[in-house]
Amino acid sequence: MRAWWAQTRAEVRMNVRRGETLLLTIGIPVLLLVFFSLAHVTTSPTPHRINFIAPGILALCVLSTSLVALSISTGFERSFGVLRRLHVTPLGQRRLIGAKIAGVLVTEALQVVILSLVALALKWHPRGGVSGALEVLALLILGSAGCAGIGLLLAGRLRAEVNLAASNGLYLILLLLSGIVVPVTSLPAFVQRIVVGLPSGALADGLHRVLGQGLGPSKADWLSLAIWAVLAPLLAARTFRFD
Amino acid sequence: MSNAIEIKNLRVTFGDLHAVDDVSLHVAYGEVASLLGPNGAGKTSVVETLLGFRPPTSGTVRLHGLDPMRDHAEVVARTGALLQRGGVWFPMTPAQVLELTATYYQAPRSASELLSLLDLDRCARTPWRRLSGGEQQRTLLALALLGRPRVLVLDEPTTAVDPEGRQVIREIVRSERDRGCALLITTHELDEAERLADYLVIMNRGHVVAQGTLDELAGSPEMIIELSGAINPTELAEVLDCVVVLDGPLRVRCAVGSTPERITAVTTYLTSVQVTMVSLRTRASLEERYLELIADERSGLRQ
Image: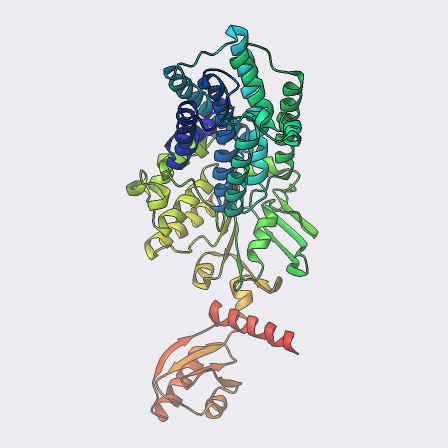
């Protein structure tokens, strides 16, 4: 427990000190939040654009931190031999992955606070009340576990440079296809059918339903997120390579 | 008690490449063994298999009597390793990474004690990316020592280290051996191996070319004489009544052990031909034996 806790603190410290991570986890989401809520470049299912954009950007936070930032940093740790060295210490794979996921959750908590404050300044009116807040928390945790699993799956198998390109490519695809800034109803019909099957799609849909409409997440949202949250980390743990 | 390190008939293949081919060796607690060989000899593959990075293709490896794949957690808790291409998070300083890594162990050594021991006090607060190669290597050695290991596996520990740093590393190797730790050191720096190792294993192209103590590897006693000028080896052979061969233009090797009488005879002969003895050694250096063994092995492969 002591090793896991120390490693988690180290992961958080490194996350908040790394310039490129801060750009990806805070800079880009804030920029997208402000831009898409003020500029009328996409359709909005709600009269006040910010009420649609803000929940989507919270889903984007999970995507950028759990999947992209985690994947890229872990990929480079492998490339620079950090993981090789850790393999011959008693830290162990489970504690390392556990610390990385915990580090991601702490970073996301900071993101949620900062982005919520920016969104509230842009006149965001979240709905859902206390029960909604709990649902949002559960959605974020499940979404983070699934995305972190995918990120570690990529980082544990691909060369750092290939992983960098793959993670960024995946980020862009999921950003556009998950109903984060572009409403799902604006996407082609066949894409609409698969959106909920994506962890980011199910997360964005769940957050839109709770925070935008005051409804609970759909069963499909929960099911999709739960499957990703279990399977992706398991697969990552089974295939993860230290060198 | 089982050996600290036990490798039996180890084979490691990567596709068609036989990286390690039928290697056996053992290291007892309180012993330093050195794995020598040119680049690509298979030393690092042996080390990585020993540390559980991959299973052997065939054969067995044991550390503390345990399987490094199956019993990995137990093995690494009692083993320190300095790996080639082993790194540290770039923004972290030696002090920070030592303090963090200390939390992984039940009863670690103090980070500040190790910083002093490895002469890292001056750069203890310098980020990893700004450390010199030698400082990085000494930090990695400090990390390997943190858990009070009973076995230390050091893969090329003196690479990029300056003479002062080498001296520090040598002292640590000796003190770890003296407290009963088993050490396996891979290197292609023969003078380091000669100074540190109790037992040497020379590898080439994946297999063991020779192994033994320094005395065993040095072969039969002989006199190796450096000269100020050329001589006729046949004449010297008659004086010493042994085989004498030229080993370079100004060096002869006499296949006989050194005695005061023989040294006097050589000196008298050299005076008569007006040549001076520059140096006399009574056995081949490790470097000479190593080069001979590798050359023999290569010529054997060609035949």
